[in-house]
Length: 195
Image (cartoon, rainbow, N blue to C red; front, side, top):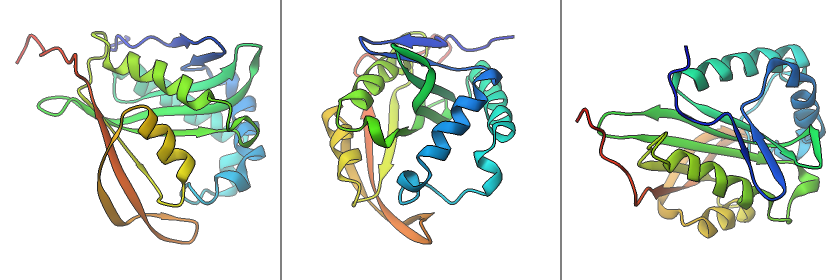
């Protein structure tokens, strides 16, 4: 039973965002393999098995279950002109309701698609979905390494506020790394009827 009102597919002028299906595992594995070195400075370490279609099929299956339960929302990004090739992902995780109505945002984009406004376009649409009356989140939190100027710029352009620096926040690229903490709040948040 689908408990979440989030739409499973979103479109922009150039992009198609979808929650996916297990048949997408080969394209997802290919996305991670071809960007392995590019993502290494920004992502936690991953085992060799992470890059296989079998592992990605299981991750997609678990992601779809979380999506249906409203616990997390992952969207795979494809160019509208190339719907079989994954070029990125957006993940709204650690969704908390109650007095918080918040989540944590993560995202990744193919190294050959950077600098073309794709991530801003995809995030704008996905954030609109998270802030819609269907999903009704109040706050989205995102963290990025100070060295990742491109990530900081896209968040600033989307209106995320800098809230502080977390020392030794995540173990990435062989060491504990500092991260800037940012957040975006929903100005149209609708107070739930059951409060």
